[in-house]
Length: 320
Ligand SMILES: NC(=O)c1ccc[n+]([C@@H]2O[C@H](COP(=O)([O-])OP(=O)(O)OC[C@H]3O[C@@H](n4cnc5c(N)ncnc54)[C@H](O)[C@@H]3O)[C@@H](O)[C@H]2O)c1
Image 1: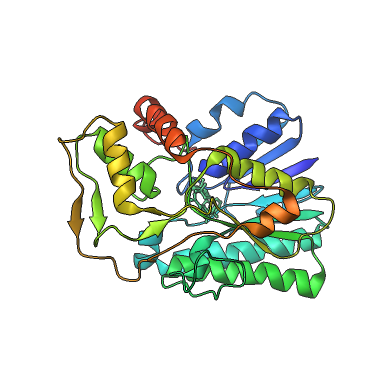
Image 2: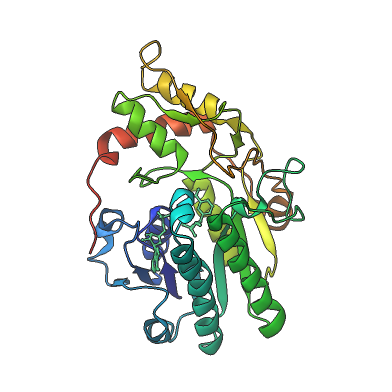
């Protein structure tokens, strides 16, 4: 198959590049390196079935060229940082919403067989009930979440209007190697970097806000099951562990694994405006349709991640 992976030099996208280059597919990785890292895909550059393109999903002409003959698009490119979306809502909208619309339109024109879109649990906002299933209201309080709702619903519109084969994956927090804190990284990498640097983790508010964490291996398996599903999915599907972990517990676990108990304690600051209070997935649909559920143990994977971070997490980010 010929595949286009947008955001392929990022955390999740680069793991998909690894998997499908390894399986012998022809993979085009498109990334503008807004948050991507050349180190994530450098090892693939010598493979004949891998092509890295520095470019932007806002560039329709480029997409028109790249989409020719493509069978499957994995669309992950996004302005992913919630904090940045507060200060740059327009950029977030242009990349996440208009960029997604460009992808959908070019995929339609070029008869792409399947589009697999990385939506987010952030579309739900704070849980009105738990665990959150796909029918939960979409109520994101911040520009990042709002942009993911708009893109998620635009996918739905392309399904309804043009009959495109689109799978909408609502990922809950994902962590693992290649997730670095570069100022805005995921909470696991932010805390890990601080604790390994002997700086206390900062918690907004009481730390009782909760998230649902999935290890990258399980998430790659989710994408792969969706790719191989024998008919169009055409609806959003949650992918999360169903386990609720508070940010305070997470900080303390990281302190413990790093051997800094009694040395470092989380520092509490004012709560963040619009921060989501609870996120826990109901992934029954993923289990019933695809046989997917989390198989990795959170604490064990956290230990592995911290070991990885010690070796590679502090490498400077390299762009093309
Ligand atoms: N990691 C998570 O916990 C999580 C949870 C829910 C949803 N998601 C979604 O999964 C996707 C991947 O997230 P990630 O964690 O790997 O983040 P990431 O920042 O590592 O990856 C995003 C990639 O997109 C690239 N990009 C940004 N703007 C672009 C543009 N205009 N054109 C081309 N490339 C562009 C970035 O350079 C980066 O490599 C995102 O769509 C994100 O919203 C991630």
